[in-house]
Amino acid sequence: MTSNTLFDLTGKIALVTGASRGIGEYIAKLLAQSGAHVIVSSRKLEGCQRVVDDIISEGGSAQAIACHIGDMAQIEEIFAQINEQHGTLDILVNNAAANPYFGHILETDLSSFQKTVDVNIRGYFFMSSAGAKLMKEKGGAIVNVASVNGVIPGEMQGVYSITKAAVISMTQAFAKECAQFNIRVNALLPGATDTKFAATLINNPAILKQAMAHVPMKRVAQPQEMAGTVLYLVSDAASYTTGTCINVDGGYLIG
Image 1: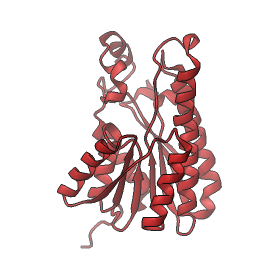
Image 2: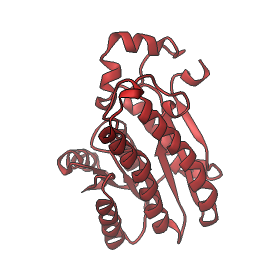
Image 3: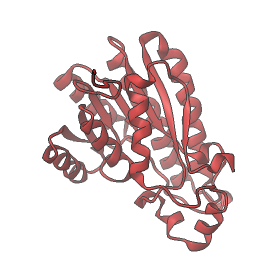
């Protein structure tokens, strides 16, 4: 009997953004457990290093590089460093996101709007562009973490939902134009997940009850429940999968 190598990422170089906690942390750890060398990235180096230390203590391979994807100079910097140290990139997971405003869409201020767009649209776009350029020689896989809010806008989360809808469209656009380079581009659409990022929703009993009324599984996801889908999308198991969006939402989008 031969071992199953479909999910073996040995020798792969992976970059995961927003990986200092929450969904990104569990994605980084699972990719490392599957054999990849994982570049753990987020705005603050300390949080990234904690995740790297965990990975290494479990026998994995990882390094920490700070990057705020809302800053174009930092995007250029991280990819220059990856190119210098590794000369290639096999996997990119765009998970870092911004959601600074929770309230009625009519009250959205310019600063919150700009920050959300700069990270969730401009950041994802130029991270994907720079990552794909490093992948052109031998192919690779990009996964964008979008949201079910990109399909059905979340109440009091207008601008965030708009940017996540853009991420879904962006995923399909990159998939179509990068397929010629054997670069696959897909998206994960999480539902309500118990993370610090979603605390405004999770910690408000009234809002949470209303949200769970539309989730057949009647519970919030744990962040580790998102990682397996990403592993599938970046692995050989998904070798003919591109431009797709996978909902991991407890059935929310089917009501």
